[in-house]
Image 1: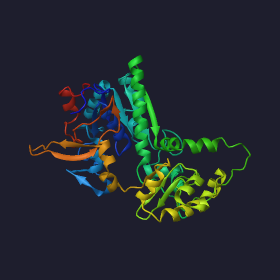
Image 2 (image 1 turned 90 degrees about the vertical axis):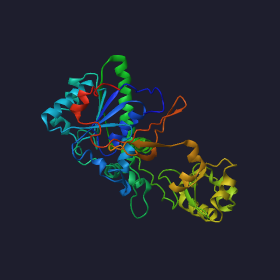
Image 3 (image 1 turned 45 degrees about the vertical axis):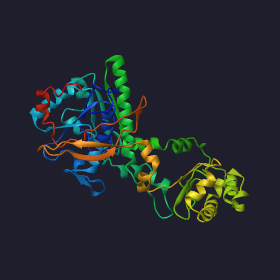
Image 4 (image 1 turned 180 degrees about the vertical axis):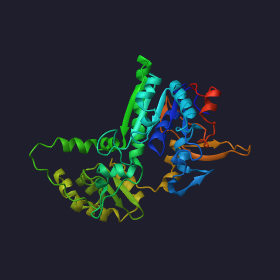
Length: 398
């Protein structure tokens, strides 16, 4: 169903035991690159993502978020507590190239599908294990969830107001971890081509959040021992980064908001007609006085429209952009130009018209080719159970 004739992971079989977001999206990334991905789900209920509705939205019996994360996959059901089903699943594992799971530590061990057991069945398998906080340590058994991982990693304090910490308003830990899983899997697949040996790739939500803060962590960890840390100046009312100087932030205009990234405060002051800002030519003051600088800049920018300021700042090379709502972005010609959507189809089992949904495509382009496919997320058990898959030769690689 791919619009691209030959993709780099074509012929690989991925077993997706994961649920929620990070694991399914990691498997989706591999599917978009050509792998055959088969979801292994519980009978009756399926994976929990089918019923966790982002924004309370559903379509054709599943949540829209499930549709977004699981397009371009197959789905079979298996009761991992049933010996016959478990034996069939192990036979699939012996044939597969990749297995992705994100159960809490200990779950796969209890059913004999942990990494050591799976690699004993299939030494060429690439086994991906994603957790909340790692397989060991004091938090290993705690619930692994995006907001919780952001919180323990200190991320909400980076966008804090004077009143309270502010988490990132998207599942950033899950999405970043999905990229790390896919990266690790791909690296081990390359090694497998060279050596024939599979292996284990592990990561966690916590590691994804700590890696996200590599600049801040490196700065903190390399402070000279015994040297008192210089207190950070108060965040400005328009700051967009806890550790960058003014004017880095978002500012109200007469009809919206404007984001300004990199610019000298004095140059910016001359461009917008502020003598106060034009006189601040010492970069140390851009940091130590960022609150007052931001207030002065906001007062000036509020006098004209966003478009009017872009007409001033863009020709001068100031790094700036309008702050769009999602609806405004969808209407913009830049959104049309990048072609970030695709239509997928889910066949009607009764033979009626297929269900059609618009969703995102892979953000990757290969050899100039946009990666699109038309296969929607599968219904629960759409491809039967694990025994059906094996009988039909469906456990073979793509």
